[in-house]
Length: 256
Image (tube, rainbow, N blue to C red; front, top):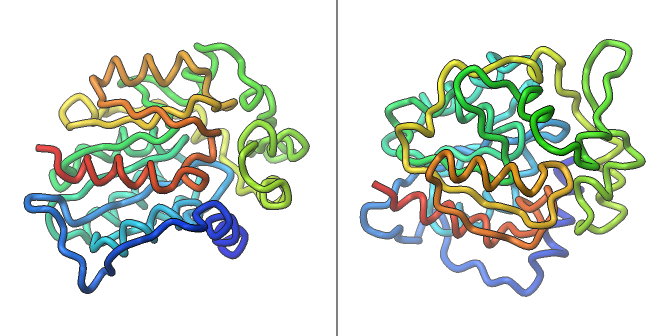
């Protein structure tokens, strides 16, 4: 999947100049140096690679969490292990299902700010299943189905239009056919912590998202008192609009 996503990034970021490098760039005074990126369901950590490349070249220490997607506890544990390796203040970022994970894992004292990118943001006691049922049934939510083992997938025929309409069709189709399943246990697990209650919070709202209903991100952001940035992109905004997403993360790095 890495090569496919890097191909997408190359196409979509063509002409973008990325200044500096991890060894020579100087970060803004007072900025958190560490960024931990948590991916969503159905994809792996390489979905964050375009954003990670931008931030790394600017001098940030970027870590990509590899979620097993077998349970909320397992994904939170993977995130906590990544946070344990950070030296100092850290911005914790989640995409889609990753928003549930950072809500639970983000109470770590190293976490200085949270960034939700096209992400679900539950309150204590809420699960992804509860959030999905509460709002309008989007094209993306309707396309989620269990397999014989109870693991959840998005219908491959609907994945390109529902998740990644602004990716090149061949790349969206490849992602559709190489999905990583989300366990039903993860889908139904409620969070016991809402880290956004005590942390500076930012939300990247994708206006053409067909997975999360438009009303939901606005509700999440208002409830969290998050700083909102709107991007005219699909649920795959972390690839398609990597530059804009990276800019929001950089703002979060300066949050106090």
